[in-house]
Every structure is written in C-alpha cells, then in structure tokens.
Length: 503
Image (cartoon, rainbow, N blue to C red; front, side, top):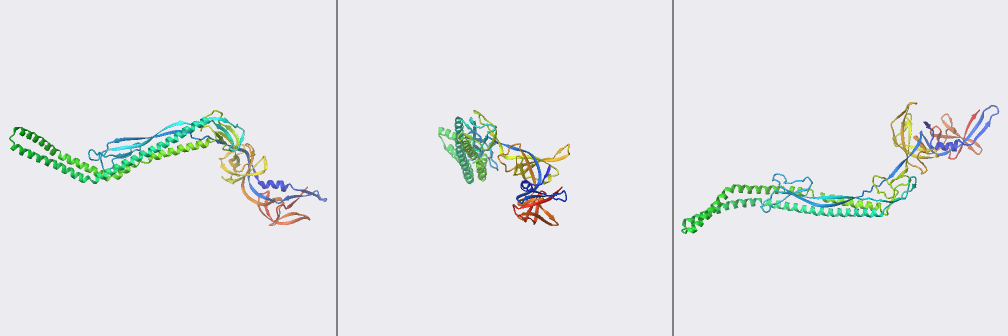
C-alpha cells in the first residue's frame, strides 16, 4: 500500500511540468552545480487520497426466456343446492364453504315462508395446455461480439402457429366464461330481489293474515255447530225411515268434523301464530337477508374478467415476442454462452444467451485498517488502468467487507468493492486497475509542482520565466496533496523555474 500524492493532475505534472527543461551552471570556485528546471502552470483537478490496485472483474448478463405460455382454457358453470334452515332471530342464511351465496325461498303452496335457503355459485374449470416454441436456426456462438438488436436465433413457423392457436382459444374461452358469470350473477340478484319483495309483502300483511286465520278457525267451528243443530231438528221431525237414516249419517259426519275442529283449534291457532312470527321475522331481517344473498355477487365475474385480461396479455406478449420469428439480443457485448441449438424447445429454465457486461465492471481491492477510515459506502473514487495510464474514470464504493488478517505481517485489511460507472469498451476482464479513494479533491483549478513554490515567512513566491530572464512573482497557494498545489497569481501556460544545487 502506498499513499498517493496526486490523481490525474499529478500525472500531468510529471509529464508536463516536472520533466521540463533542465539547466546546469557550474561554479568555478566550488564543486556545486546550479540546476534549473522549467515547469508549466496547468489546469485540472488536485486530488489526494489512498490508492490500491487489483484486477478488473466484468460481470455477466443473462438474456432469459421468460414468456409464460400455458394456454388455460376456462369454462363457467352454475351450481345450486338447497338446505333446510330453522327460523330464528338472525338471518336464515349465510355463506357456503365454497363462497356461494345462500338465498331464502318462499313456499307459496303453503301460504307461508318456509325458511328454506338455496345456494347458487359460479365455478370455473381450467385446463392448461403446454405451449412450446422450437428453435429453427442459431446465428451466434460463444466469443462472438454482438450489438443490441442483432438476431440471435429464429423460431420455427409451425411452433409459432400452434402456440398462437392455443393462446387465442384460451382468450376466447375466458371471454365466454366471463359472460356466463355475468349472466348467472344477474340471475342471483333477481332471485334475491324477488325474495326480498316477498318477505316485505308477507310481513306487511302478516297481522291481517293472522286475524283472518283465527276468524276462519272460529267460523268453521261455529258453522259445524249450526249444521249439527239443524240436522238434529230435522231428525226430530222426520217420519221417513230412509230419510231419517240419511240424516243420522250426516249428523255423525258433522259431529266428527266438529269434534276434530274443536280438538285441533289450539294447534291451528298456534300454527297461525308461528306463521305470523316467521313473516314478522323475515320482514324485520329482509334487508340483511338480501345483503347476504348478494354479498358474493361480482366475485365470480371479477375473477373471470381477470382471467380474460391475463389471457389477452399472454397473447399480446406472445405476438410481440414472435412478431417476425426472431429472438433479438437485449444487450450488446461479447457472448459467453448460448443456451440452445437447432431443434431445441425454449424453456424458462434455460437462458437464451449470456453476455459479458461491459457496463458493469468492478474492482475489489484490500485497504489496510490504517486507511479504511477514509473509505465510506457510495464514496466517489478515481480509477485508472495500467494499460491506459493517461486516462482516469469514475466509480463509487459499493461494498466494504469484513476484515482479514495476514498471519505473516499481522496486517489487518478490508476488501472494498468499487463499481466503475464510466467504462470504455476497450477494458477487459483481468486488466489491472488502480483505485484512488479520494479524501479531498478540488476541481478545475490552476496547479503547479510544490517545488516551484518559494516560501519566505508568510509569503509565497514563484520564479516566472520572462523574455528578459526571470521575474519573482507573489502568489497564493491553496490545497496541496504534497506533490502539486493549487495556485493563483499566475496564468495557465506560464513557465516557472525551479532552482537548486547539486554537488
């Protein structure tokens, strides 16, 4: 590890400033030699930080086959059941285990609500058919460089036509199932509305129906009693034996009916009261029962509609994928592997091809514990390559790993991964990169070698080369990384002199 003294600006100083002209003037009285160097005031960045080197890693990109081609044929059907439900204070219905809606029914033949509930649901049945696309020709091999949009392979026309037929049928079946669900749900709502209206009507007429029933029971007993009295009267005055026999048979029948009516009067009145109570209960809960009956309405059609949309999207995605029978490269770069050969069936488990990702280059360097304090996640870094020493690129710290120890030197270091954000196409995996973790940087300033600056007390000067020799110029010095320094008081391109003696 070494402490870097300058970034790209330092390189420029070395090439453009430090290696300037050098003059030797020998002093005849001594063995010392006066040495003068020329450096140029330049413009650029002055950077300080920690520098480490390692090899470049180029990540791989996969072009996957992610087209979902399971053609699902959907059909809808209506399922109905009925079950007895005892009356009570709550709603005589609910949701079945399958989510179908329970509906009350009315027994018109008996003249009262029976408390029976029905269930109607729309179910869908699906049958999936596997859709396969077959490779016709492959036009690339591993190691070949391609551009985004180049043809990688083609698909057979027969497999495309077969897949299209299945996917279109799936879309059509889904449409029919959706329409069937809408029809059945409309029937459910109409039935629920009919039940609601019936319960409201029965409840509103419950009192008058109950009163009429009690009056009917009483009138029937009274009528039978009157008829018995009339027949007894006829018997007492009858002299015809045959007619008398008939009257006695009629009296026996009337007496039997009368006894039965009197005997069942309490039960009949109780049944009338129960019918009245049921009608009142259904009237009171009519709205709740209606809400229960339609609570599931819309679920089946919503699900069916979603299947319609899915089927249409699958068909559209398929048409987009096979619009010209070609599979095009999604990336540009060098192909590292190809997943298929002629006659193979495309599968989501096997990638179309893999590419070397020239836009995702990383470098992992080891930074000692002495210097790790200047490194933080997402920090900007400068990166240069051994193969291109005069060029600098940008990057950022993406990961700082756990510490590792060197048993021989007892040195603790941390692996730091840097992502290079701007990368030229000429960079290859394995090249050596130099990463500078920047502790400070001033951008676009005038700078000069520190050796050109003369300090006298609190003042700073430089020797500026002129047509007539040299001129001592006062300057202001800014940030310095120990090798070069930010300077003002001179102009870009000015030549400065560095003087010294050697024996």
